[in-house]
Image (cartoon, rainbow, N blue to C red; front, side):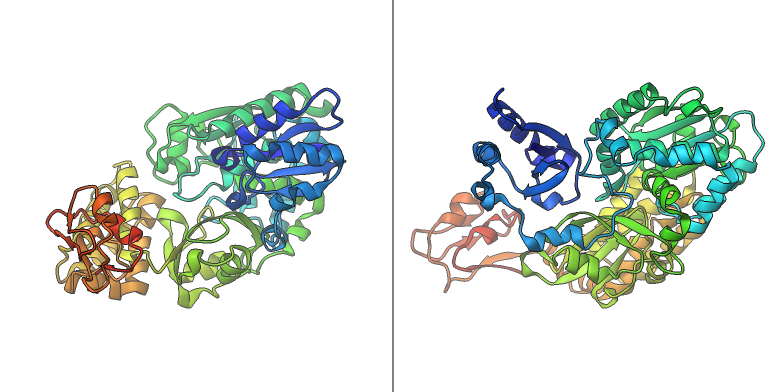
Length: 583
């Protein structure tokens, strides 16, 4: 038997490393079981997760494990008595989080040890590469990718085969295959999880792509904020070289290819492929004018192909199972599966992979378990800062590129941030404009200045200083920025503003005309007061107030000094009698 600890970033943040250390300390030489690690299985809401396995079969999946549970876990394995850990065993309704998914890109995540090439090989790892190098021409590989209908999962949804074919047909002594792992959307962590949990699937997918386009060098551009992903990928590269999956004459063929990692400094604009290339070349990350496209003139002026991690993670599955099998999933416009990072005010947050064509409602409520605290669903932000907010009335929208685009949002790389009734939509638009304005590279005026003007207007509105005509001015600016910006960052930056105005215009009007925030979230528009008939004079609020803005005697009604009040909301949250109201 084996005790396996989930040690992706989410698991470690929840205490998985401490659990691992506690269990390790209890294992002695006479024990017939061992301990191991795996990556993130996607159920971030249940971390730390520990599995008890026998010959690869999961006997028990234990959730929300702490160091104190280590003795019971070890004892249950020694005695083969798993009733000792019943209190930790995952509930059937939580298990559905996985069983309702269809996993291709995430198929090995939480299953294999990311630091073991043997684990990967034992589940048919690198078989697709062998098939390609031994039995397929580059053109046949591209044809299978074309049949699959795989679109780039980085956000634009451009046909993968078309980019590969363009790079293959371009003339150049050196060609480069580049992986964009610069995942910058707030709330998105799909690519990080794949690299941390299954780095060899990325390497294999990239090798197949390099063979298809005729590249001998591969580069993974990953943000430096992903140290665990970088660590696991570095080790995977070493192992792949040692086993002749990377380097010269791979698997005894004439195909030679090497891989290196470039750690980026975390600029959001470097998610745009030409800005990424500039950064790779040691320059400031700023987009280039297109054409020429990277397939003709990319890294070091050589033909280059760029796809993101999730795109490459699908490739070996497509080769092993055939393009038709991938195309059989999804919709007419969008084939296969898509990974989403489900976050925000949702009960079950984590990584979700579903066939295209499922509805937003199915993902958020059937898989995600609905809204925390029984609150009402309000909106979901799709596509991060480049996307838009989709309201409750459109919850039955199917997930594919065309359908989501019709709402004003985009698929993006897969961020799905859920909001409830306590979320201010004007504040949400401001949050994303704060982000895009600060991340603008400054190369073009429309993005550099335009996003700043949008940010300033939204700031005025949430501060209670909105003016008549502000909504119309926001819309005018948005369309000007979309039409004039050089790259995708600027062209899509107005989307959160446009969609919140489209679906939540009444909230903007309340902020501007009545100086009120319907969600009660904008501090400048909130007022706290105490109802004398409900206040028991317990003094708890006065004792806890950080600025001493509450006064009153014991057992007598208290009063809030609105001039001192900083509107932190602490008094409102701790009052046991419902005496404090928020207006």
